[in-house]
Amino acid sequence: MSDIARRPRPRPLPYPREDPPEELPSGTPLDALGATLYGHSAGRPSDRRPDRLPLPRWVAALAVGSVLGFLPWIVYLGFTLPAKVRAEHYDIAWLGFDCAMCTILATLAFCAIRRHAATGPVAAVASMMLLVDAWFDVFTSSANHGELALAIVLALCGELPLAILCGWVAVHAERVRARAYRSLHLRWERAMRTAEEAVSVSRTRVAPRP
Image 1 (cartoon, rainbow, N blue to C red):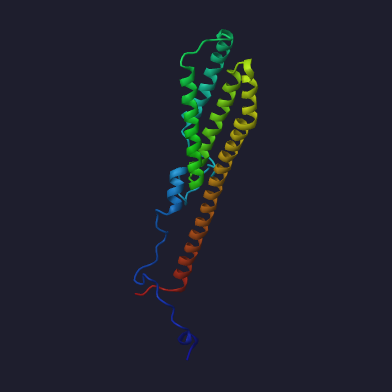
Image 2 (cartoon, helix red, strand yellow; image 1 turned 90 degrees about the vertical axis):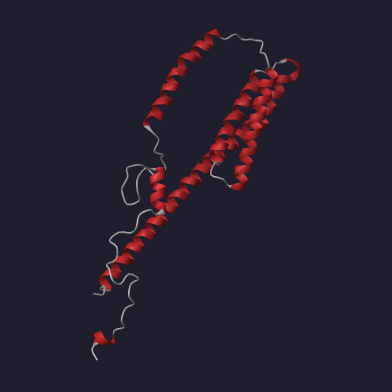
């Protein structure tokens, strides 16, 4: 008996009456993520870095224009604002701001417990609100009756350390998100290459039935 007859017959492909597909089907999770975040598919090269978002160009132009517009306004306020002023509804203003800050901190706690993707942005907002609270607490306090000293102690021991912690959480959460996406991107590319190699080997080793 010849060697060809002794050789076991290979198992047929799941599609024996037609050639295997030339390309893998589209609509993979990698394609969806790439199209959503970066505006390109997995099989097409892109000059954008995986840690950059495809924001419209007018967003950067608007931000730069806002900065340039604020600079003369700040200079104008520096020369025209009085050192002292009587504020109406001072209590309501601070009460509303503190309630908003408490709501943001509660939202941050909820997102952190659930490990939600919005933890980073919420932490960034909380950090900024804590800095604003410390700034206005110190510079709107009176030097009489120890109010200024109390505001400085609260800022140094409470608000500023918590703001730094929230800022760290915001940066760390964004790094974790970017690292997770890169890991998913690499794993899916590896799976696609393995599938393409398997299809290529099947095409060369098994001839389709007539």
